[in-house]
Length: 452
Ligand SMILES: [Ca+2]
Image (cartoon, rainbow, N blue to C red; front, side):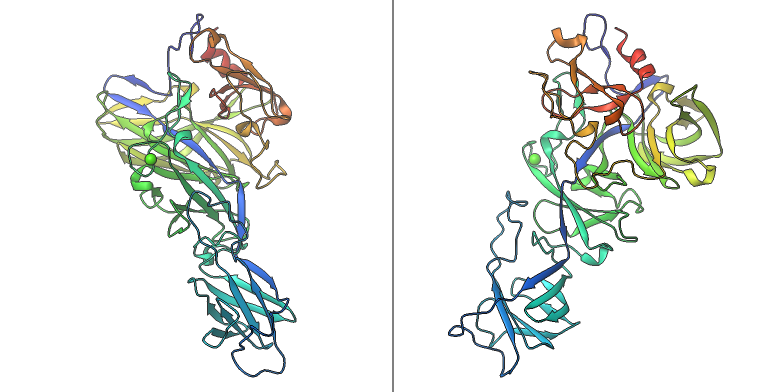
């Protein structure tokens, strides 16, 4: 919030009354902008007969070499991944894999069986045809060579992304920059980590997040796991949700929050809302959390207040989540904001209504560019705080009245065509320098927060 002079007066979604501080942790988006798959088709175009040493004497055989099994060698460019040349030989019933054209000591397996390559990759031999071999990676991905348990992928498509420390941790109005988050605990915010998501239960419904500082995704958790299991990077962040479009994940951190946008969910999904309750001095306290009302936002009229009976409840110790099962209350698609109440030893505090965390419940996905994080919505449109430029096709950026202060704040006008959360035009507060706009406000909320 800024006053009429453009001076930042208030940050975040915190308030305090009496003995409790009730708030929402800082929520960040992490984008998935690339993908890999578990199946690999290899075309066998022959081997120089003078180099070929077959695994046995077969009258019918097909063979060929791959210069590097890692086709996508730039995704993990910050990690030193060595090349994986491989040669293949099959006699129509069995396959052999070797590091070179000499198959005399190669490992072999029949079609349908499992075979291990010299780099540790385990593959199921899906089919052996004339001049073509189809493999399915069991612990390795086809294109990037990343190590990942592919039994957790129903569709066979894994989405990949990178988390950069400097863009995490929420937006700091004092600097106009993201606060940053030291994921690897080395004392700086200059590193990056990798994430992947998979659809472990139903093809196309992405529910599992993998996290790694290199190509080995041995650490993972489902959105259905308890929060402690969904917590990564030495406790730095907890997975909150995976967008139905599989193009971003929501995480929350240990820090206090700026915004309370919970993103998109499907009709019937359970909405997890992260909550923090402390003393004014910051000491965590045990609190009974309840959600007894939601406000359903309307595009045409007044919002509708709905009583949740019975209320959704949880007991937390300083930090935790309250789960709201929308299907219990027959809540269909729309935008909902949740009233959060905390009770500690008879003292009850309720989150101010304009701060209520919001979620968009979708019956179907309105964004056709699934998997693309580029210009797919307002969240991916940068506003350059120096020039006001934005990506072609993105909403226009307008400097706010805070422009005379340092740093500038950006108010971005989001036309209806770009608004994924509502079907109306609205304002959103830019983060500043080349980082995405976020924290979308309805026009009424804008009036309350800008007070210009
Ligand atoms: Ca670091």
